[in-house]
Length: 340
Image 1 (cartoon, rainbow, N blue to C red):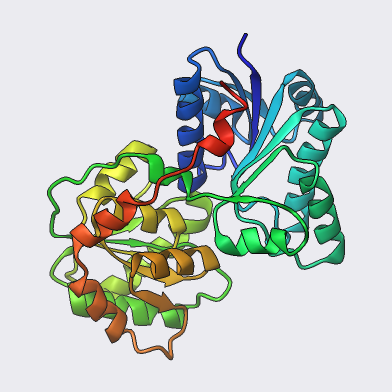
Image 2 (tube, helix red, strand yellow):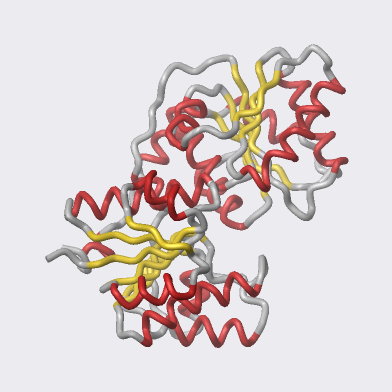
């Protein structure tokens, strides 16, 4: 009889990166056991169920969550950065509640490829560390998270991002430059205008596509950036890519000539497709990926000279990016023993 698996994470919010992780996780579980009984806690349970062929429960339905945890054998919490309080304390408390509930009901709990922290409150640290000490398996996606837990007496295994395990297309590149932006507290119009001027200077003769990975956070800033491009160069060709499936998004990114991206998974998808990529450093995970893959990195500052990163972008080699990604494999062995 297959084990009953409950997955908890930032699902159903139409965030490309989190949905990509869920897709990888569900596909792997199905390869291990085609009859896997999988339920996902989601903001949009009908859409999640239809997209992945799983059962799904509304994530903030108390009765639904209680029933889902009660009936599962294993809780998989992740991936992503769920256990942090810098975005919101409410979010941290929610994910901790799910883990705590599973532990109270004597379920096995797996922390799946998460980034841990920042935890800015003593209360948050005690809550998270106490829960993690009782988990059966903990895998983290970056060395900083692993060391953070180790310094607090918690053993965690270091893995790469699960999306590295997906094979992406590497088709013919077109004369198209991708720009992927998201709303962020330190991004202002002055930075955006400076970036737009650089894009026009270096790529004004190409089609510029703005990529929306999460409608609620990306669309407005992409629209604003498009207007800035047209203010600087009225004849420039632009297009906003949004409201398409994850697979279609990957296909479009795979044929780009260049990508300028903020989000971690926008950078990851691009370099896995051999697209020359400039990363914008809004988060430590993006900085680390850029460092590991030898990508040019742009800080969010109008005082920075943007020419050196753009010049490095032009000099990148697609085969070098593909070689780097080929060596990044997700270590499923930490995970599979619970399901085979």
